[in-house]
Length: 324
Image 1 (cartoon, rainbow, N blue to C red):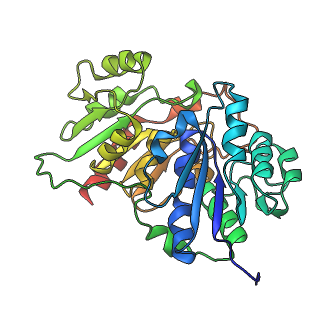
Image 2: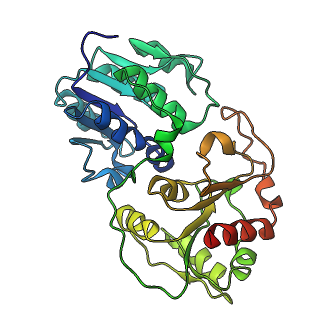
């Protein structure tokens, strides 16, 4: 048992959207065990919106990393103040350097447990956990290691929504499905969503989109189906929309993972990514994969096996979830 539990805590999780969504669960566990702690979160400006005004984050330190404004980043870090613990959940060289700049009492994954092994050299305290372990377990294990608490599977399953959402009292004639058909890489994208939509005609279906290219593809997907394309929403608006849906179906993307984070039923599709690592599977949060569980460190981005998934399989799972 350590002599004193930290009070001022810095969380380093810079990007990307899905990784941030997977990490937000740690906030409620930290506040449960250290209710008086002050939590600062260091994040890349591109992904800061979803964390703005989060009730469990006391300070959001935003770094314009993509803009290359290194002087501005350094200024933010210099003015961050002192911390009792700095925890790097990213495990990259960049995040490790930022962690070291923020304080001496630093925590992170060891060289065998992170994507960029050199990052493990920068931390004072290092956790050994398999890189292919489930991402939620990895994040909670690092938080528990740094802040001296424990957690159980039952606690994860009983989690509160990880974002501040309002559940509307809507009376709808049909249950609502959101389709999130896009992802950061083509090899993560399923190509038969139109077939899935046409097998779910008894439900209200909306398709997400967030760029001109996605809008064009979403309109093509909705063509000659009963699905509607959502207007472009910011991340907070989209999170609210997802929280009030009955089911989300999507690829392995940050948008899809928001459903799990806000306790909404989901079906996540996997081809060349490890489903058991990248999703916390529950009775209401399912995965459909191709049977592959590749090493997360060596993904073949030219493997489009996700296209082998049968649309009937997805539709049948969806009906099962929606019928309870």
